[in-house]
Image (cartoon, rainbow, N blue to C red; front, side):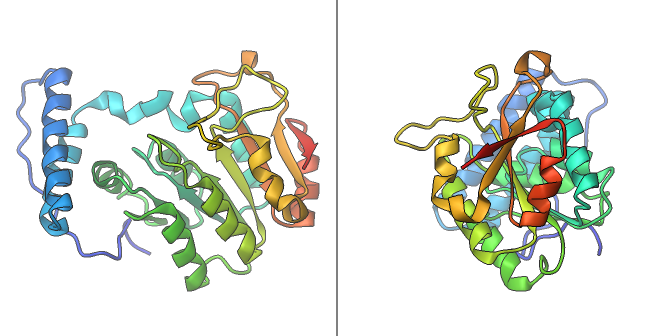
Length: 278
């Protein structure tokens, strides 16, 4: 395996000569936004190839803005307890593959890639964030990144058989800016009956209102009710036992669900998780 790659043909990265003097951060943001807007207009006009240059230029300018390296407060929203929980789950369940939906700026992806040697598959639908993340993840030969809708991404992965006979952790975080693919993501994963588990960011912790969660209205909210159609398959949801008051960073909630009985049994033995019958 080589560098992070996309199956789609894309232009070579634009070479930008970086001036030695510092550029005000506000100017960097304005310039990057302008190039992204050009990319969007070209894409809307049907010229995806030319649009890529706008997104690449925006991403290159973003790379000069060091504040963006720790978007949302750092890996896992800057949440130390969440980070500890993630690595405990990976180690105790012997996770072999990680699949992430919603790369954003690859803050969490890079953190995971620095410690996890197995394959990491990730997708991002936004052109600017995709180009930024692709460049950021180049040092990690085990990371594969695509610019694609997360639902299509998951279907493609299952068709390749890349996930068969391995313990897979699905980290679902593609919901943002009004986008809510979670229902379809969950349906695709459950239908394929792989040996693995699901971890969802921005999910309501029903017994701790201190944790934030996503609610886009019209029933599109990440609460336990959205799991009920899959009661028979999932049976139990697991939530963090640590109070939000002890958490750092953005204090966003999470939920974990195992796709097989043996993995659910392993989750039940982790003290920092509380079972919740669906």
